[in-house]
Length: 227
Length: 411
Image (cartoon, rainbow over all chains, first blue to last red; front, side, top):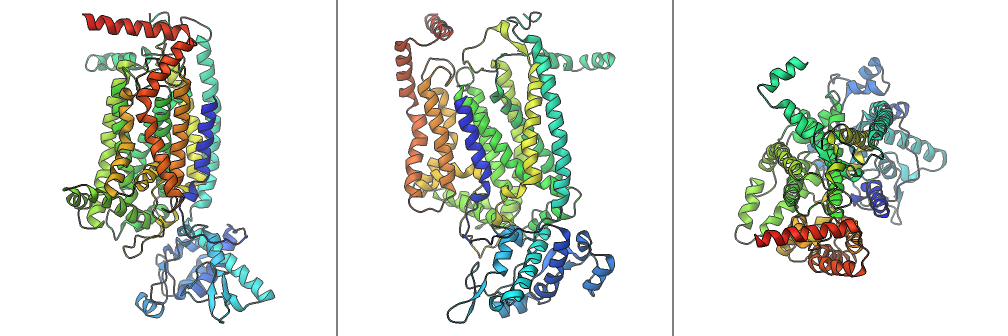
């Protein structure tokens, strides 16, 4: 029994820290809770489309998908301009222009909250990580030497302005959390029913197993007709 | 219904098969829950094949389309996200179940005579599952997929004379690219069916020698119970509990089994800061990296994977079973499990001190478990017989086996 327990404990450990296997550059993540509600995602979408999409695309999200986080059809029509409902969210700056300006094409943001250790919290930490160093240059704690400009002007904001920017950044993180896995809410909902069913089934399976095995309990010759 | 069965039985031995393999098939009555993992492995094979089948209907094995096709499945295909997450989490669940099944086999000595062929078919099955997993991992064409495949296929270049050619044969090109992706997809689709066939052989071998049991000593025939309904129900209960854990992870934590870097499309120009395989390969990866010479590292990794097959020969003890009556073996096995877990952790660390030295020490210990077994097992047997603490049934069994061996020699 001791060995069984030992092995099970070790296995529990492995599974609980499995996410740590992905060794990456260590970034001190901000102490903030990501709002996973669709209201926050919608607010974030507005900021992303206004600020981020000048350089970044979100090619796995199509305009029609915005209706899943609470946009009405009219609201989507208002933001998509000449693009179709089916069209993906593409950056305004063409890739060639971006490469000339920044030296690289700004990465697509659809999966950004999944592509970094820390997820949406990393995105928040990055956007709120801008600061002015001793040479009066703007740099970033999470991505030192980054070529991405401080679009919120966060490094130079103070007081109420800084709070407002933090709220906007918080919403951007919420939106990007949605874009990396739009089916998360549905998955969690369905999961409740699946696991609930399995728990009930397990109880019944256990009772049936016990009842059938009771037939041979204590009997020294459990299968007399065979032998 | 009876009429239908009779019609079939005239043309196919269906009733006879059901009787012989299920309702009339004798199993020891004292099997514990460690014996459930074989059926769970079979379940995972079926789950992976079914989800894989439907994923393959939407997947595009082309380097320009692979990553996008998976996002298409995650977002547009009805319940595509569920298929994908079951399949990706399923790979980890499959290995977890296999390792536990192997642990049972090692601890209870189920590899010993007359079950050697079961051990060897099992060993080949392990290699096939590892191959399928390795190739499947390339398919999403993420950063870790690409670079992991590059690192591992590069290793074969260390083989003398044929090394370079083998690397090109594996990749289909000088570098990992479209040719690699296409052939890995084909082989990833094929191997599970080879696995299924070998599982059938594994089960035929099992039904020939019948299950071992926790006591190690073959139980009296009159104590056997039919597989159906006793073990069908027990296995079903095991499946239900397993599914709670497995589907719990699928629905509530599937991303923890997909490395962050693999959500970035593969970029041949950008090497990730740390290239790490999935957790189930980590112990072997640690052994590979522990040895500075590439070829020796590859050989050591290979041997570490297949050395289990040698166990029927390495274990020289005549005391039946595994750890049940053998305290030295029991503790060696426990130490072995800890060594494997520690190697797994080390495999994920950067290749620097003190991890390198630790990996070397633990790799030696890993092989030591197997290579010291011939002497340790014989010494332990002598010591236990001297101590006189072995139960009568064990001594009786050893005596009867001795008699059988002597009689066989004489005639």
